[in-house]
Amino acid sequence: MKKGLPASIWVAGAALFLAIAALTLLTAGATRRPAWGQLAFAGLLAVLIVGGVLGKRRLAWLWGHYLSLFLAIIQAATLGLAWWRGAAVPWQVALTLSGVSAAFLVAFLALGRRSALGWFDLLCPACGTPSRMGADFLFRQARCRKCGEVW
Image (tube, rainbow, N blue to C red):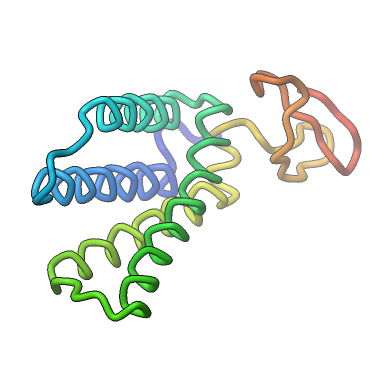
């Protein structure tokens, strides 16, 4: 395997960073006083996931991959529901939420690419099949669904 980060990891990391930065700016500009405990928890989780993705941690891949999809859906649904209810959504907020949703979706797709799976050693050494299944709770080992190999 080549040395260095594959392009899919660069794209996923950049997309996660942009989404988190945009949400931070949106929250900081909110008219209501933000809940600092929740913001601190979200920031810690973001640092752990992005750091884990860059550090080849399979558990961070799992969280980054599926949480990105969930957050993309939540952001898009929030905006869609606001429009459906007829709420006056400033164009800056709508643009930011659309961008955040798109960035999370890009991160989800990038982390699902074969090169990203290879970065996290999620390609079965026996048969070469991509695997997204852990063999243990903390995802230190992976299991191939096709041949049953554990590595």
